[in-house]
Amino acid sequence: MESSQASPESRIPNPEPRLTRVSPERLTDFCVRAMTTVGMTEADARITAGILVRTDMRGIFTHGTVSLRRYVQQMRDGGVNPRAVPQVTSEGPAWALVDGHRALGMVAGHAGMMAAITKAKTTGVGMVGVRHSNHFGAASAYALMALDHQMIGLAMSNTDVVMNIPGGRGAMIGNNPLSYAIPAGAQPAMVLDIAMSTVAGGKVATMKHLGKPVPLGWLTDGDGQPTTDPGVFPSPGALTPMGGHKGYGLALLVETLAGVLAGAAMTTDIISWAKETHQPCDEGHSFIAVNVGAMMPFDRFQARMDELIARMRTAPKAKGAERIYVPGEMEYESEQTARQHGVPLTEMAVNSLKGLAEDLDLHTYLPFDHSAIHNPQSATQ
Image 1 (cartoon, rainbow, N blue to C red):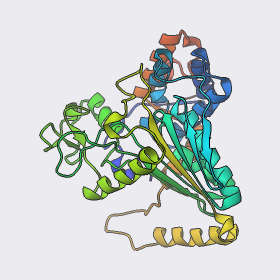
Image 2: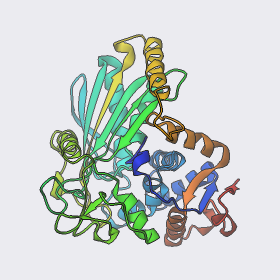
Image 3: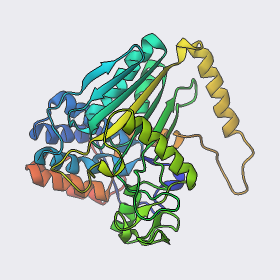
């Protein structure tokens, strides 16, 4: 159940019918070539490409390779420093603060989560705040990193203001994504990745691209009233917080940990990565890693998680329901399918990657050809 920021209830109601499946290796190589062309090291480009491609594989189309063209433009215009090296500026046994130095969010986010994991190996729990970063894509990409170390991972970020608050008019706070990844045993890990808005802004952008109205409850207009018109977003309208005051309260928690405590910009001080390419966003992130083995034998924890998941899956079903999912199960299955049949790309992502190839004269390296674009079953080998 991912959102970032994508959960089943916030998935696009009418997904684009034309999906292109491409080789993950060719897609990764194209992404790496694009980023190294504008000055990024190959190591950082591979970190970033790995995150974006896996995001697409997990079916989170709004935060995968569709965003790469924008990130590259930020690097070309100076909003992102492609050669930046994130730096630990202060630390204790179980915590650290990292200055991203205007790095791409994936590079800064990867450094922050790895630092939290390193701390947790010796102290049981590690927490790291990152400042002077940029948009980091799907929050689950970083929470998932903890699973390889038999840990629970949490990742969050503040964002530019896109969401209204109860009683307010217009955008007052970011939708501030939060993700967790929890290892299990025989069952896939439990992974949640959500924005604090009813849906992520990318969902609205996609509906606008498709020429469709959004469901009532996703947006408010310039007067703070509900609307189905995606054209009011991002201005003068705003996304609504999920569950009203509940989403608002959780957004403030993320703002506190990722913004206030990390030393990053807050709310209206954050520059929108979607609107401005010449200035750094100065978004902040926060990462927490919990070393399960420090508190309980890992195999016992796995068995207990399997039991918890089994209780959810075998719960009495509502009338008409065929299956009960646990968070992350849909994305896990999407990723397994992608590993067998290729990475799914929406028409919007295909067009964005084609535009990026035109920007950088990389047409011959595109991971798809024209004949593949309208064939939902094709996979470029």
